[in-house]
Length: 349
Ligand code: KG4
Ligand code: ZN
Image (cartoon, rainbow, N blue to C red):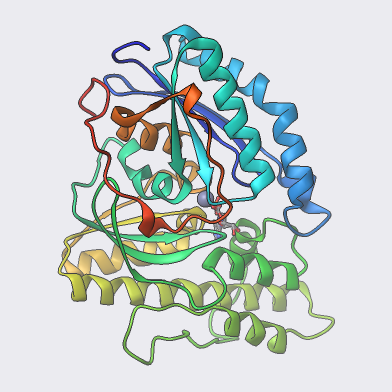
C-alpha cells in the first residue's frame, strides 16, 4: 500500500450508487452519483432487491468514471472506504464486495465506514469547516437525532426519534398528497405555492422538556385534514403547514440542545438538511443564539460517497488489508463507534 494517497469511497447503502475520491493533502478530487429514484418511484418506496441489482449494474462504470475524473489510477489508491452499514443488507453487500475485489486486485487497504459517521462528518468537505466539539442535527430518511460530536468516533446521542424519522415523515406525507418517491424535495416545491395560515399542525413534543422527536402523529394529522378530492391549492396549503410544523419542531429542539449543552457550533446533516425552509430557520435561530452554523452543500446532505471517502480518510490510519474480509451490517448503532486508533494517512485536511 502507498504510505499515503487518495481514498476511494463507495456508497451503496440504499438507493444511490455513489463513488468519490478524497485525498488528505489535496481534498475532494471527484464524486459521482447515480440515483435510483426513477426505478423505485412506481413502488412508492425503495424495493431492496431492485436496489441491490441496480448497484451491481452500475458500480463498475461509476468507479471507472470517478477515477478518470479524479485523474487517479487504481494502483495509486491507498485505501477503499465503503459503507458497511446501517442500510439495506443486499445493497450494502454489493458495495462491500466490490470494494474488497478492488482492494485485492490493487493492493489497497479497506476501511468499513458507518453511514451516519459519513453524514456527521460531511461538513468537513466544505471550505468553512466546524471545529470539534459541535452539536449535530442529523435528519435523514432513516434517522432524526441530535448528537454531541467531540471528535471522529466520539458521538453522544442526546435526542432521538420515538417513531418516524423526519425524512420518512416527509416521504409519507408527500405520498398522501399524491407526490411520488422520494417525496421530501417534491413536497418542499409544492409548499412554495401554499398560502400561509390556512392549515396549522401541532409542533410535536415541543410542549414538554426534552430533545426527543416524534413525527408519526403529524402524518396522521395531515391525513385527517386532507379532503378526499383536495384541489391543487389545498394540497399546497397542507404541504406548507406540514413543512412549517416539521421545520419549526427541528429548530426548537436545536435551540434547546444548544442551551442544554452550551456548544457554540451547530451542524446540520442528512437529506432533510437540504430543505431550504429548515436552513433558513436554523440560520435565524443561530444568529439569535450567537452560535456558528455549518451546512454541507445540499448534494452532500443527501446520500453521497464524498462523505464516505472523507470518513474513510479520517479512519485511514487503521485501514485493514483486503484479506481481513468485509463487513456489512443492516443495523449498526452509532454508539458502537470508537475513535480511530491511529492518525490518518498523510495530509492535514
Ligand atoms: O440522507 P438521505 O439521502 O438518505 C438516508 O440516509 O436516509 O435522506 C433522504 C431523505 C428522504 O426522506 C428525502 O425525502 C429527504 O431526505 N429530503 C428532503 C429534502 N431533500 C431530501 N426532505 C425535505 N426537503 C428536502 N429538500
Ligand atoms: Zn443517508
